[in-house]
Image: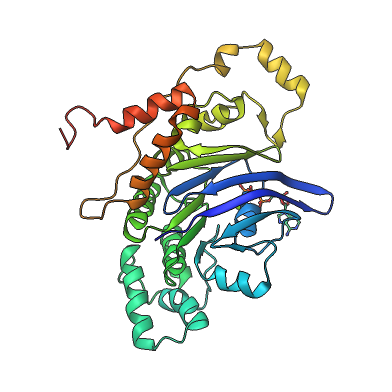
Length: 328
Ligand SMILES: Nc1ncnc2c1ncn2[C@@H]1O[C@H](COP(=O)(O)OP(=O)(O)OP(=O)(O)O)[C@@H](O)[C@H]1O
Ligand SMILES: [Mg+2]
């Protein structure tokens, strides 16, 4: 089952450029979380810091007692084996078949026999719906298929923590919907802790249990999906509505004068009232119950008192099956 990831006071800079500071959050075991944020806010840097590929200068990332920032390189390498990582671009080797690409981590990191490798690889290829394409080269398949191959490769070492960097980039809306369902089904099947970085508002609205957002070198917020989806924090509501009006500009923040001029204008645009929270995706028929969802329900119930009114209402509504629903 999934493992909790505790991030405490993380600060990362490159030279004089601070990327984000004092980021603290917990990815609850076996739950699905999404990190949002405009381009360049350091989402990829955040994923790489969690897995210990980049070193923040302050803070800790605790996984099973190992600190991915400060522990010995040996402990970090060992803990890294718990991860499955799906890169922004799929990162497949162009001269290898899909089969060999997906088998690569097994050949590299384990001493499994070829017959065992074949069994595992074909099982993962089946999960992501690529049966029949295993002999093809990455250049011979579509971008969406490459994405799924990248996901299959992230799955071969039975990861307990899965990090996906923009799994939807370059996918059409239908493929994105299939991918969303695939991520939820995967979570139901293996109960791994998942963190997905995405710009896609449909994924953000329907997939995760928890959501956070990076902006202006800070973690704006992180918590149950309903908190962000009903938030009236300007930067969050602007992002979720995909509006130009608000604090986010073309090159990240707008200056104060632009923002003030905007607010003189049509303030109605900035206050669109409470948004409706669409239901979260359920696993496909025949899939196991999501253990993460059961644990989350208990967890969220115990923190109800600290949540804003709008989020509480949305959570309570999600507990009531829709009229005419399957459980009526
Ligand atoms: N190895 C590095 N050395 C120096 N600067 C870096 C390095 N990696 C990332 N950066 C800088 O950190 C900032 C955040 O980059 P990052 O790739 O994490 O953004 P992002 O939120 O993932 O953006 P996008 O949504 O476009 O993928 C950028 O300004 C980038 O130039
Ligand atoms: Mg990125």
